[in-house]
Each structure stands twice: as structure tokens, then as C-alpha cells.
Image (tube, rainbow, N blue to C red; front, side, top):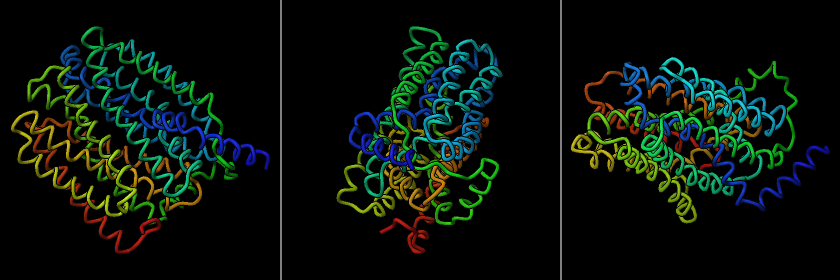
Length: 404
């Protein structure tokens, strides 16, 4: 009881100090794009320097997301059982140490191994930060906070490749890992000064965690929303993995110019999230999601038929896809969390695990030795957009909790 009273007091203090709470939750959620996107401009050059194929180098992205997803399933139940802060601090410590080690890698196998270890630590951030939003906020307020976080998170994929490009311009790629370690230190400092948010710890023994995931898998509304989100973002991960090859190898841009085009795509996601934040005051979230899913499909058509005409045609087509995904993400996340009333940490972990496993598959797929990746990416967007748009209409007809 004392733990619950103390946490409720902390919750009130957190809600009154949103200027600190929202940026910290956003930083914790942003570890995947910050970690993966910062090194993207260096990948083609690393492949040449180490005399290996770009598809082999891209395995550092694939293995990062596979490991990241697996460890999400670990951190979620741990945070339900022991609170949010301690698992976060352990994960951040692992991330900082392995980022420092990454500065000394000297080949593709070592790079992939370092990414695996980084992912094991970084996974604490996304799942636990999302569970913390469920701990602290409710209903429409939580959707609004998720939109704020999404806007701030949009800066991560926008700035990360630019930072990576400027590091490559003046220093070596090793400094990218040192920058990531510094980012982890900032996050750890924030968590150390942040109170516990879990109102009441779970009494479920860790040996029975599998039962927790079993209950979630048997929750059809929750799983449907998880799959809809994961399929909708499948093309974005394909773009992330294939963007350097498309802009640098196919369009012949420099690493710095590539980073600016990649930042434009990140700006699209952030603008979509910001538009969601503004529009939810006047437009029902259900209608926003319908518009967003239609936008993904339409953007895929433009990408397929116009993307090969030049870097700007490709970038603007992809801008529409990414804007639509940014618009849909806050209400989609909120709607998925609305389907569960307990085991919130596990639910957050399973949601992001599925999201990133789909992402890892899409990164592997686009990294195959395609003669031209642009039509492959365009077709992927169209197929995923059509599937999600159709599924969303089925969901609305059947009705799920949280759809007004």
C-alpha cells in the first residue's frame, strides 16, 4: 500500500512537469532510429572498405531489430514485476558500454555483433517508456501525449543521419558509436532523476511470464491492432534499409546530401504526428486513421510510377507515405493499448516486438540483390497499404474498444 501511495504522489508530480516527462519518454522511445540511422550514411563506404557486399553490411540493421524485438519480450514482464526504473537503468548501462565497444570494431562480423549487444540494452527504452505512458496518462490525454512524443521522436530519424554525415565529413565513423554512448548517458541521467511510475507491481512469478503473453495472444482486438500497425510500418523499414543504396548508389548523391534527403523523410513523419496532434481536437481519431491508411496506399502508387524519375520524385512520393504513417501512429498506439487492462508492460513489449520483427523482415527483403530497389519498394508500399486499409474497415465494422 505504501508503494502505491508513493507512486500516486510521484504520478501527480510527473503530470505537472510535462516539460521533462515528454522529452525523456521520447528519448527512450527513439533509441532504435537514433542507433540505426546515424550510421546509415557510412554503410556503402564500410562495404567498400571491408570488401564485403552491402547486403552483408545491412545485416547489422536486421540483427539489431531481431535482437531488439526479442529483448522487448524480456523487459516488459520484468518491468511489470519489479517496476520501470531498475530495468531501464540496466538496459541503458548495457547500451552505453556496448556503444563504447562499437568504436573499436574492425569488420562486418564485429559490427553485427556489436549491434546485437546494443539492441539488448536499447530494448529497455521503447517498451518501458510506452508502459510508462499507460501508467501516467489515460484516454484522450494519453493519445495527446503519444502525439507529442511522436513529434519529438520525429527529430531522431531527421537528425541522426545528418549527424552521421557531418561526423563522416570531419572525423571517422568510429565517432558515431561514441555519440550514441553519449546519448545513452543523457538518458540514464534522466531516468536516475525520474520517479517510479508503476502504481502496483505484478505478483505474477517470472516463471509464468509465458502465460501473460498467452493471454495477450488470445486477445483478438489487441492482436488485430498490433498486426495492423506492424504491416503499415513494414514499408518504412524497407526504406530505412534501402535508402542509402537508392540515394547514394542509384542517384549518385554524396553521404551528406543523402542525409538531408533522409531527414526530409523523417520530417514527414514528424509533420504527420504534429498534424495528428492538431487535428484530434476537431476530427475523430477513427477518421484520421482512415485518411492515413488511404494516404499510405496512394503514396505507394506515386512511388511505383514516379519514384525512378530522380531523387526529388522519389523523396516526395516517400514523403506522402511517411506523413501518413506519422498521422496514424499516435491513435494506433493508443487504440492498441486500450484493448488491455493489465500486464501493460508485456502488452507494450509484444506490440513493439511485432512491429520490429516485421521491420527486420522488411529490411532483409529490401537488402536482397535487387537490380532496382525503387519499384520493389513501391510495390511493397501498395500491397501493405491495401492490406491495412481493408483490415481497418473490417475492424470498424466489428467494433473494438476505444473506437467511437
